[in-house]
Image (cartoon, rainbow, N blue to C red; front, side, top):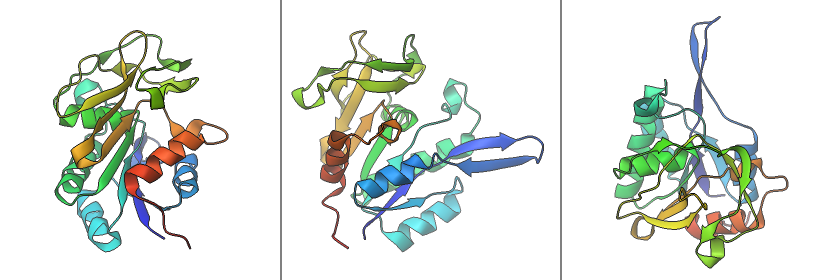
Length: 205
C-alpha cells in the first residue's frame, strides 16, 4: 500500500508543560478512503526527514489547525517542518495537498500574503471558478485568506467575496483547498477522486 504522510497540529498542555502533536482521527480515515496508508509526521524535522527517506511517500498532506506564526500563531516548530516538507517534496517530485492551514502554508511559501477575512468560520460557501470546482457547497473554518495569488500558483476556485478557495501549481503537483475534506460525512467522492489524481492511482492490496 502506498504511503501518504500527513502533518499534525501543535497543542500546548500547560498542566503538563508539554507541546503535543495531534490530529483529527478523520484525517487518516480520509487518506485511507483515498486508498493510501496514512502516516502522521511529528513536528520534529530530524525525525520527519528520516521518515521521508524510510517511507518514500507518494504524497504529503499539509493539514489544518494553528495559524502561521507570522500571522499570530504559536507553533513555530510546525511552520519549520511544513516549510521543509514542502521544499523536500518539490525537489523529490512528491505531490502535496494542503487544506485550510495547509493551503495557507503553500500560499506563504510562494510569497502570497494572507489577511483577515469575515464570514468564513463555521459556514458553507458556494464556489466560483473552474467547472470541476463548482460543487454545491464546501465547508469553511478559516479567519485568514488570500485575495491576490501570485505565480507560479494558479487560482482554481474562489468565493463571491474574492477569497481564493482552491489553488494549484501543476508543474510541481501541488494542490490546495481552504475546505476540510475530512469534515464531510460521508467523504465527498470528488475530493477523493481529486486526491487520487494528484498522488497517483492507489495500488490494490
